[in-house]
Length: 308
Image (cartoon, rainbow, N blue to C red; front, side, top):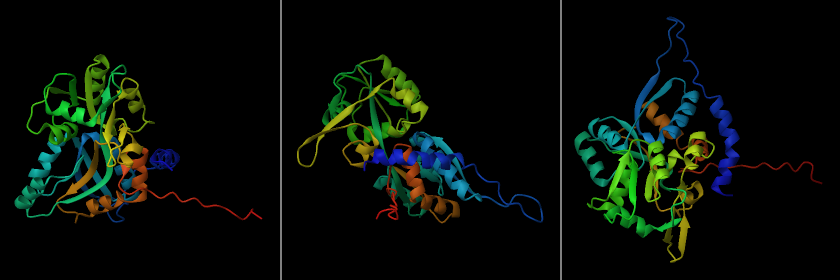
């Protein structure tokens, strides 16, 4: 069974859960008539994961009405800055921390950083529908990022974005590529749509849910560029950013969605990160078009009573 098929099987289940996940009112104190205390934390998240995290939080709070997560969405650079300056901040990033970042945090706070990757996203590459060729080699893309050949225009979503950081860290190595950033995914898609020599890089999470009307609308304007790369046996494999090819490891620009905290002793933080590793959360990740760290089980009961 493919991941895509699993996703389709789960759509009706998740849809019904989301429709019923309005957060119940907290219990009222019998003496004062006032709402009982609600435990809450603030979580800063890379804005690329707004759609996914809003669903995760809605389901969690529907099950834990006395707990609340206040989500604030910002570009990765701003989220990372908050993590590095606030001793007890909790964040969601599209990567894991570097060894230097962990060491700096430990030195400054005296606290070990807890990192839990609960899903896989990717960097999607979008081009004009008439862009030729349909496929570029992984080495070609690496070369485009690391030098200034000017063969194509490279455009990224927003200064300080996780996509920009990921691609430059992986390939630029101190070079200054001919690239620029625009303010949003929509602006990037519009730009690519008007220029056949532009290659755009966006979070796959922005377009991964093929049942989301916004995602479908954006994908009608561009096409996903395929990437070719030899596997461990030397066979050339061609893949695009998709749920199934992220899951089987064939797409080379996958990245983890990671919940990071200095301390998970907080009741809300502990409960929520545990929830992210449960089957219900995995189904939310699947429905969003991404890949959960722990794949939900699909149990089929066969009634043999009528079989003689």
